[in-house]
Length: 414
Image (cartoon, rainbow, N blue to C red; front, side, top):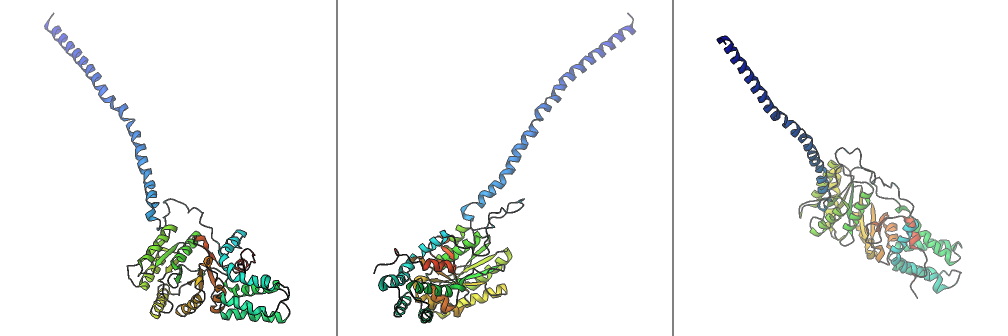
């Protein structure tokens, strides 16, 4: 074997060894590159559900914050992406509906004390002491005594008696039932103009609630706000009684209970400035109705009545128009004093209507007739109980029907 052949064999061996090394190195490299592919592929989709779940929990957390009791006085904002608000609110009643039998029965119960008072005494005049079908003109004197002691007022009592005398002279009242019906007709005629709810046509509408201490002013304000809220209106309560912390607190409790915003100023702030700022905020936020709860005041104190006039001027300055309603709250248990209050408050502000409270606890419900007849003020609401729904929109026909129903079981014994 010559040198040429030896060199060729060496080269061939080297090539073979190189090829073998290359094959072995490739086999070792392949697992290192292929192993990550199956292990990393499932990891990417596995992360997606966790990420989606975290983002879905965000609106739930916001809902929990908005549902907390501490924020119930703030109206709940609409959720992003919601097409329209759900329609449970549109239960708006533009006109008062005809009272149902259940409403009338509830009203009768609320007026039981008044019916057991002067109405029962009137009823006894006909069926008890007289005991005869023909009417004696002396009956009018007895009717007069009952009406006067019922706090109806002398002026209204004389109006009713004059009408009865006139009809008696024309032989229209020939028996006790006709006299009873005549008294009822006179009451219906006096109250006829009280029909109608609050006049809230502009936005924001402003209702200023006024009255003396202890008549149920703040409670009436809260019940009225609840009533308007249930009709789909956005209500702002204004605590204008800045000198009594308890009054502000009571209004805030009402705000939380019914989900209304409450605007309050600093302690001892000028009530007029609080009303001005609240009215401007209502304009900016698209509030439907602003209800101003003013401080209770004695109707005989001139400086306090002047403060009311200032609040009235402030509303007009803020809105460019007077308040839509000035609601005077009167306690029916005050009888004749309620009539005096109505007269003096009318001098301070243009009172547009009356809310008569506590009719369920007095025999002096006849004061309703005197207020409407003498002061020419409509009764907007009556209070016949402590529940929110016991603040009733005044409906003359159902009121007269409930008041003048002659029930022997309710009449006191002679």
